[in-house]
Length: 242
Image (cartoon, rainbow, N blue to C red; front, top):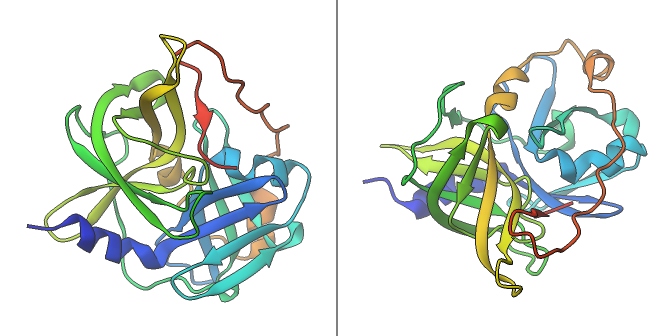
């Protein structure tokens, strides 16, 4: 039986820590087979939205290889959907070290049923290391294309990969988006993590002729969303990165 530790080992080379002038988050390298020297990092849109809108630099740390690269506005293309809180950052592959091999995704328009166990990886702001988390799917919200998961997603983990186990390798099912604490009693009690599904990532699997071509097609930057404000409402999400 395929084990969680094996899945972590398989995904570790793809994980990157993302730092912007306003915060940190997580991301993972997509398995693009680019013939034009490009690679792509999936993350949550809220991790990149401020730097994207204000044309600020973004630092990517590939902890597994020790590589760190500062990506300026003219060295990248960003495709982002704030409604789905999902984004793809396209850069020159020579700037980082994309791992070889495939990465499986759940088919488009499919989702895991409630009760399935999933794991997720990310770089919490409170620790420099890549961390593993797990929990079971509590609900699927079709209108938001998101999972509610019985687990935690603290600051810095936003944009990390959410995956389940199959026979021989992990299968990507989503991207970490936010955490909803339970404030029904007025206290901060354990809540639910939110993960967006991979539908947007399926749509972005495009082989651009060049970085300039990708930049010409990139999303129009939108003003960053205001930070979530703590309240007693149990459904108020707290972003888990960026």
